[in-house]
Length: 108
Image 1 (cartoon, rainbow, N blue to C red):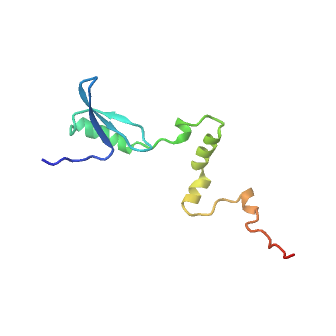
Image 2: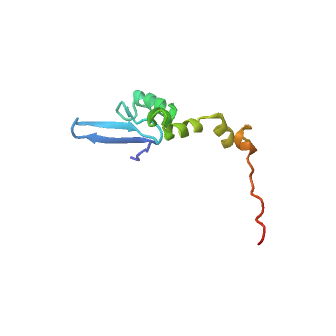
Image 3: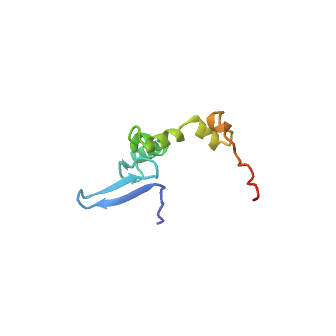
């Protein structure tokens, strides 16, 4: 009999509780305990919900309000960052009027 490996699923036997435990773990997502046994309809339904859940963003979970981390997380969620990641030029602002190259250095 062959074993089927399901992405983002970890399973083990918990000695203390004397039962098998199944957990969904994907980077950026919350870790979720799934109902067993493996292959049951309840497990697949919970697995789909965990997979479709949006990843956790640092501002809501880890950053304190007013910190540098919160400012960075807010920037990553901003329209300017989205435009940069899509390859479009950012909207005009104070930084767009800055000189992009320095004048040539004259020889002595």
